[in-house]
Amino acid sequence: MTPAQFKKLLSELEHLTDTQVRRVETFLKGDDAVQPIITELEQRMVDTPECPHCHSSLINRHGKAGSMQRYRCKNCLKTFTATTDTPLARLRHKEKWLDYLHCMINGKVLRESAKECDINLKTSFRWRHRFLQLPATLKASLLEGIVEADETLFARSEKGSKTLDRKPRKRGMKAKKRGRSKDDWVPVLTVRDRGKHTYEAILPGVSTQQLNDELKGKIEKDSVLCSDGFKAYIKFAQGNDLIHKRLNVAAGVKVIDKVFHIQNVNAYHSRLKEWLQRFHGVATKYLDNYLGWFRFLDTQENPNKNNLFKAQQHLAGT
Ligand SMILES: [Zn+2]
Image 1 (cartoon, rainbow, N blue to C red):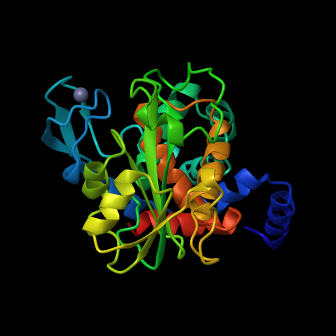
Image 2 (cartoon, rainbow, N blue to C red):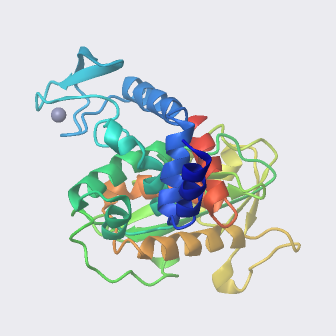
């Protein structure tokens, strides 16, 4: 390229959109960032086999597809690889995965994400749900110090998220509704320490047994558990050598000794629900994915382009 041509190229680059700049960056840097994520997806297929077409866990190895393991589903007989239905499935899509992640971080809805990344809506839907599974398992393995625990409810939706068009339920309806029909509500337990380590689980119900199943060994001994004092928490704290501070908010006890409260976890729930609103209803079967993504996002200060690369590192390192 002559110096004059190069000068012309540089002047043209000035007119690129943000998305186009990212594509140029990806193009120049090559695929290095992609391989660790593919490795992670392949490992996940080994650890938790699942057919992307019918979600059956009964799959067989079925030759190779390039350098990747190919599988065949015993149930629907379709073949796939670990990257099927992700932005990394085809070479021509690989350059778009960062754009797509960027759209997700900015909470763009399916249609916008598709438009921004120049893919069709059906593809955007599939990508979102497979891609979202990636951070869903990112959970704190140990909480310590002052540990806040509380649960919040989500309206159960068996339908695809695309068709759900219900108004978000009102907040602050929790305590009385613990006995509410499991057909209508899904309780999500969030446990967060002051270092912002966050553990979350969708529970079949809120009982001592459930808390033990989820949290046993995950809270450091002699930590201080703060809860709203629901009886399941009392028994759980007793059985696990935890000091327990009961915040009876309904009776006006919001803070004990200035430091013991559940306001961080409650604020977390508020931010989570606000963020989820932009998706206009989330199917329950995908809820865990959204929770994972939000846990991931909420640890970032003000997501921007730099954090995108942190995000990438984070995904690659798990
Ligand atoms: Zn299948």
